Length: 568
Image (cartoon, rainbow, N blue to C red):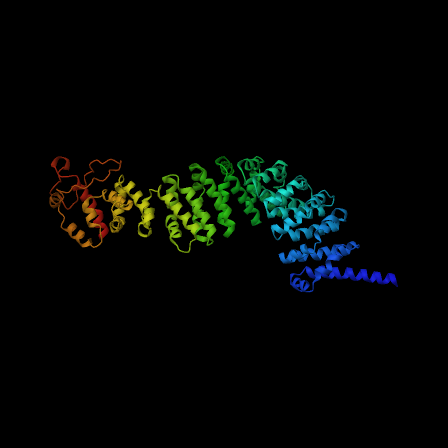
């Protein structure tokens, strides 16, 4: 009778903790369990003599602590973690795995809770679990160590000091895929904080072990291995070179066609973290055909998945004009223009604008590649839009200014005359003043397109940069052209053109002394004589160099014809 009562009590306790463990697995029941003050009933059962009761009590506590930071704080305040940690090494494997789960559920919420777990002596117990023969115990311990390392560099250093890194590297060599994934995750979380921590991981042989797993058929493992290599590579040139030295990029490019989009993203992210360090590392990626793969990836991706590819193009172009030219030849500028027009998120636009600026700021050819892609008006729009963030406006302004200072493709610059503010238009006018001085055909096109008229409409303060550029531009044209360009003079220009006779022109321009336009070779020589039109068969104009007629006479005759065509 007495034994039956004890058996019934034990059976009831087991049934109770099993029921609570099952209920806690459903998030909808957590609030009801908290209101029933179930924690105070579970704490004593964690130390029960019956292993199955201990296991289920820990499982219920872990599931509830995993639900929210507030419930994790209740577990901490219950002062049960020190007893739990102390008993882990001497318990069976089920208790070890469940105990590690409870520690992980508490530590995941914040740095403070992770620090409390560490202060209770959890690291020593978890490192002992890494030495266990059971792969499940190793996996649970490695996962918890990764969660603790995730919080801060200080906690990661504590994990390193506890001797966990060599055991995690050994776990990479186990046959279990799940254990390899978790061990790679833990090493990734340790490496991500500082160069020193990443160097410790690299010095234990982790890079070589990870590189051997890059061709694993398991997509989840490939994704995690790529992430870990990325966290190691990002800190320094030396670490990136160690990763490149394993020749993984010969195999990695294949996975840009992987069905798992996150595997592809991690490949691109790894490339991005490698190429940012030096031109030599960028050249390695270029030689592997990486730029074409990045452009193809951007074409097939959308949203935040595009960000690492955009940054990769910018990093490569930033190192040298030759690498920027390689980006242009791989159609990188065109793809960045597509990204800029399709994406709405501000941080993606910022990255795209920055990359465009890195490509276009070297030479006139680089700037023309950006300009002919129609990106200058878009950069101006992003700079002037009130909805753009401050960072986007600053990046757009810098990229636009850097490109304008190199751009000599006037058809792409001209639209900016009509919409750019003064601080931008001064750079546009500066480029026009440089090109028009040496290119007569460009001068004629500038008149025909209405650009010269727009320049005359601008109000510029004497002595300002805009005023000086306008003065330089005006000096490239005869005064008669400047006179008839302002609005309202169309009828006058047509009337003068209708009444125009060569003899009249000789007299009307005899006293004109405008600056001579540049000849195609850039000199200020006498311009070539215009061909004699059919309307003037009776008289052949004298050579101005011998007749005493100023060269501006013939220049004015050359400019009057395009002006007439414009107004007609």
